[in-house]
Image 1: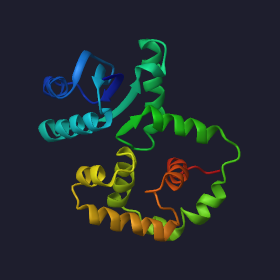
Image 2 (image 1 turned 90 degrees about the vertical axis):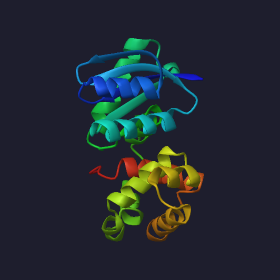
Image 3 (image 1 turned 45 degrees about the vertical axis):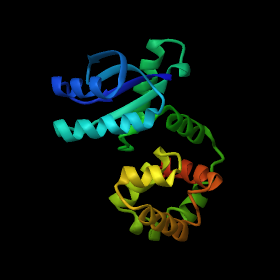
Image 4 (image 1 turned 180 degrees about the vertical axis):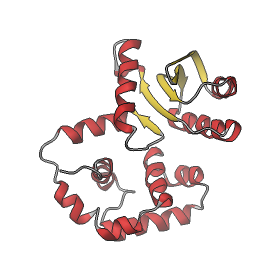
Length: 201
């Protein structure tokens, strides 16, 4: 199993701490500032974190934001803590509940490039028709589909919808944007654009 360093941003309670401890294979847990600091092992970190977030929501009626770093992303625990903090600073404005290190890498790559054709993205993906089409349901569909690594079965289960409903939504995204996010190349381009859709220039 792989080892991860995780921050769960939520107000402290014994109930929440018990949920986390009972839901994850934890080797260390503490609370500081406004988050639980956790070291854990997992074979499927995204699935594990989605489950624990849902358990917290169901049992304590509290929402949370979670940042996830593999131990190999930094040299020591202090560096991992700083990395998770930096990830949270950027993604607070994105209102994304689960932030992985790979998400952060995509952000760094896309935001550091001066040659990304944002005008093209605005003219092809982020058209008026697309923004009129976007609602909480479609935003959640896109986010969960990426979290599930473009796996239709896993994503439909996480969204609590039939796989045909998910396929219908993905087909509609393709019709409006021209990007089939079931395909790796289209998904990679769409993902970079999606993370920067609110960028001004």
